[in-house]
Image 1 (tube, rainbow, N blue to C red):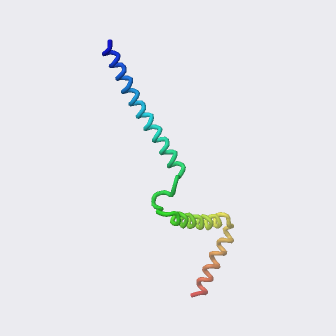
Image 2 (tube, one colour):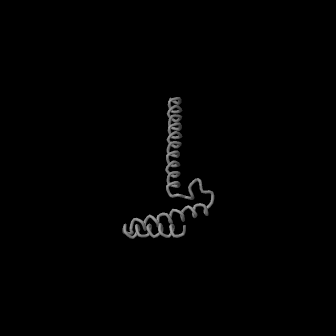
Image 3 (cartoon, helix red, strand yellow):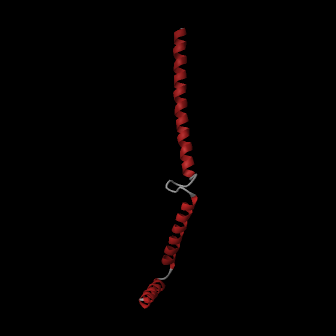
Length: 92
């Protein structure tokens, strides 16, 4: 009878340890995912904040040009392009 109790107690300890490690691993993965999803810092490839700010400014400038092209009427854009061509020809 004592051997049966020891066997049952050992089994309970082993199962509890395995379940604890499994739950701990799952919780750790969830926390890691939440940390990376928040964007805790700059992404890889940017070593300092000024590089990231420069890149952001470049993207914003390009976006502004694209917005202007998309919202301007086609005739205004064509007129501006033609004016630039005339200025280039006059400069040569």
